Image (tube, rainbow over all chains, first blue to last red; front, side):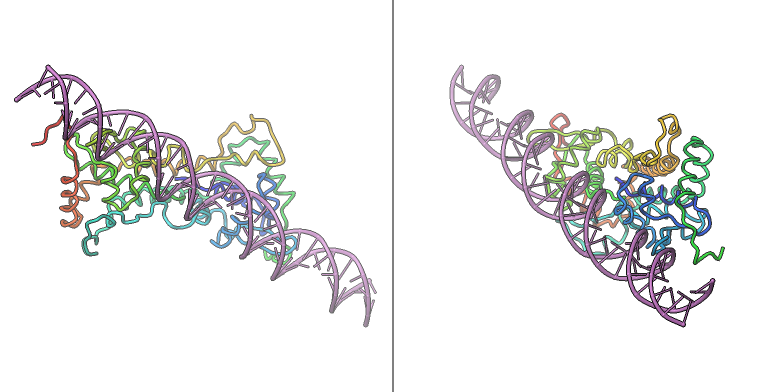
Length: 170
Length: 170
DNA sequence: GTAGTGTTACTCGGATAAATATTGTCCGAGTGACATCGG
DNA sequence: CCGATGTCACTCGGACAATATTTATCCGAGTAACACTAC
């Protein structure tokens, strides 16, 4: 039961991208610098988010990443599943069938009760994550965090964001 | 987000031990055979359960493992935490402080909102596991599983269980 | 026949390798901006 | 002076090592049962 280090980075990056105006972008290198991370490695996680449809990537100079949809429609569950994978953490290996006494498949028609209990707990976990919208995270940060940090973060985004010129149908 | 393979084995072993009468024991080798697992590796997980106070180990010939308390007072959470560790899956590395702009510690007095949301979800996960008692798992297995499998499992336990000398068998 | 004692076989327990997943790094393909050149 | 074009720098994207964690195995310490011997 351990989540990868990249989950934290992915959420922070998504929250930072939520502060970008319009269809502007932030480059992966910029976000890596903001959090003191290895740029190349952060790209790996950002690509996972792009593949999952949470972010969009813009190539070329003045390119970068942006949210694929409004922050209100992105949940922590979307991000966690994108980075960690969609399959459940507990995988029933059906070890109950691996013993010396064998029966045909009909004897194991009912799913393993242990697996059911574990998956039920995981559904509760995912449901809680699904209720945490990215916009809530950002609003909480803006409201409760130290104002110096908030101001510095906004200034950082303002300074590094790149307004998309070619696609400014805004 | 991935649980170790040993969690499944640990839960199955605990459920099997719940079927042992009185203060009898089952050896690790016996349970490993029942599930087709490596005996030496299963011992590692059983020891974790012993260290956590979920199981008790009896050394010497006719030794083995038994539940440390009644199955009604053992939850899946106890087992999962014993095997996977008690620390939460999401560990906040405070990467928000690792950027180029630094503030003193007072600016970060409030805990990270992302961390709070992740821990809240994990509390929901653990709460669901805490509601799943080992006795419920066993009762569900006895009631809903195929009766041939139930009979075979009970027979296996009957055949391999070792009555502790203090409790004389009938 | 009974009690004491030494042996023994079986158990758990921890230290030790192999396999796998995660983390971190590098270089290449692609793309839009910029400077240059021609009209 | 304006437009087309070639070059370039910057971006993402995926392939390649290093590290950490998990998985698997082996051998040793400990203990209670068993057998043997002496009384």
